[in-house]
Length: 338
Image 1: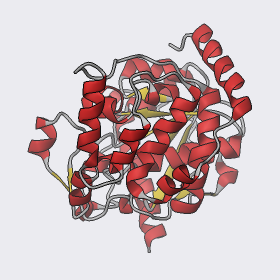
Image 2: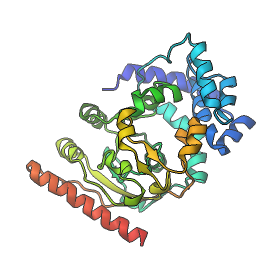
Image 3: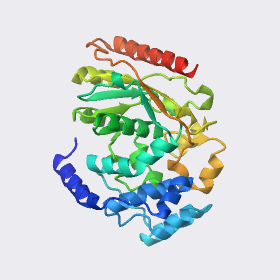
């Protein structure tokens, strides 16, 4: 459950600092168009609005940009912190920071790099909470979710939160890449039932991937083939009387193309997926590119709202309805691709 007092305090701090909004320097513009620099943009923007004593410094940012330099930067930071990892902290959702981050950083990336488009917008409810269920893929940083959250936020003028794998919050690699609070502050919700339900009760828009990690890990050979749907979102929709808005995303499979998932290494490193593709050589030379993805066109097609998915039926009926929704979305995907 979000601590309302902490949220208001954090938002007040952002409002005060936002009087001096983040201004792009030549270095930031360079980072925007140089793939290893996206991680620098995210961290520099955070440091503009938040105290981050354990964060990266300017010298280390410069090392990000040369082959293998990230490893030297990480060693430098580790020594600077007294041979320890960055502190693990828990943050609360800050709608105001989500807004300034979207306006000052995401808007350019989404509009000109991923060319995000929200179509059939007349089918998007204009008021109230909802669960937005989308096919999730790409085997990379969740740009298909982030782009949809941005576009819906722009269309509805409201905040949107995304259900995210727990690795995005607590994996050691993420703690080194980004500030420990980054995902929570920007609206990420841990993919656990209690956290999901708590977010639902806040009357917000929640983005959800019914396939779970089965979507990204299916690999390039099975692109645009929907995997088995979980049923938790249908149960929560029925319990709290919240509509489900199905959305079809076209273009997400090209965020990290030609991939296969290395399951043994994935389990060894405790990652939700570990893709093998020609891009992996670049990622080994420039680990900061972990938040980058291939340039593509992300199109989102909003489907008719589902208001009565389960009607308090038994588990078998709920499962059947989830699979029926999957089949309907698969038909839409096939038609859009053809």
